[in-house]
Image: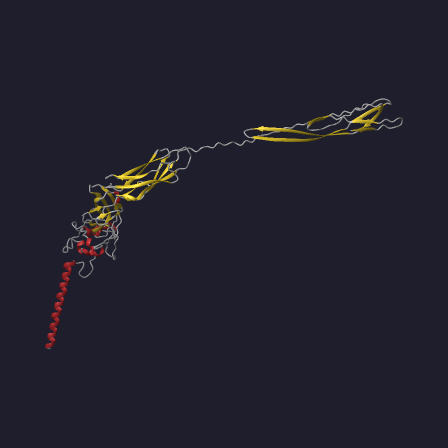
Length: 485
């Protein structure tokens, strides 16, 4: 019994201590987290991004007063839908401190939804219910570069940020010389994890050696309209030290043939210091020295402080029509002193021809028109005469054939001489059929008349006299005229 009594007392004491411990835990929870969290997750803080950073203070005045709501809590309750994080709620400035609820809770666009990982960094979260709680301005830790303290050639810059709670809209870089003159300016809008907001390239060879300062201005990104974005500023001092270089001002020159001279300019990258000189010479291209230009060579000497020299080359005009021609001017790299020869160290000079093209004299081709005319006319009138003492009737046929040849020569003379010979040959046949009527009386005479029919072209006059012989018979003999042609 005694043992049972002792055991019961131990159990009762243990139970009493356990109750006390639990009560203490509940009290601490209530004091620390308020009525929303002792036994469960806080309903309101869990419904906004990064709400657990301030817990109930996100919506209430204090951890003691859970009745009085802040404007943030009222906006949260009156939102559509109620007690939901939305873009319109994120764009509101509930505490009137000049920053939106989204800017203070690291969700500028209001795109976060319950269940997602909290946006941004909890280190930059501020209380949207407290006007004196707002994001810090951007702070540039340093201006980054790739050259150390002495710059040469082409360089660029970037920024290393210490704080940028709202992100950056842009970073502007400005380089000034020791006199405050701006020699380079560039704006970057591209964030990067390695070289943040890297600037464009600056060619330091375009300025004189000496001391320079780059100033970087980082402008924050703001969601709320009508407010002035804050900036962070950082500077960096450095030296520019570039070797002096010399080069022609341009790779090409052009001048009219009758232009007299052409001026070729040589420039230094910075004012000459001490002895600075270089040799040069011309050389033929398609142009020929002595007929198109006067060859020239020599040494250019720069006085201290000078930055350029000019080479005057004489051009020779002519009257020949020709194509544009070129020649070259070249720097001798091995002869340079006080500066190094850079590109372009060869320049091309084009001589533009100014002569009109010559129009050649051409002898036109003439085609003479020749109309040779040959006319031949042949007229034949044969006459037959016969005397007979007898009366008789004789019928005969006479055929006359004449062959005529007519030759004419026509000569035409122009700028050129053309001679043509036209030969025409006409063969004419004249046929005459004479009709003879003879009355013969013994011891008498008869005269027959012949009328030939002739058709000939060309017209040629021909006269034929046929010879007619008539035989006589006596008494009962028949007289047959025999005609000989």
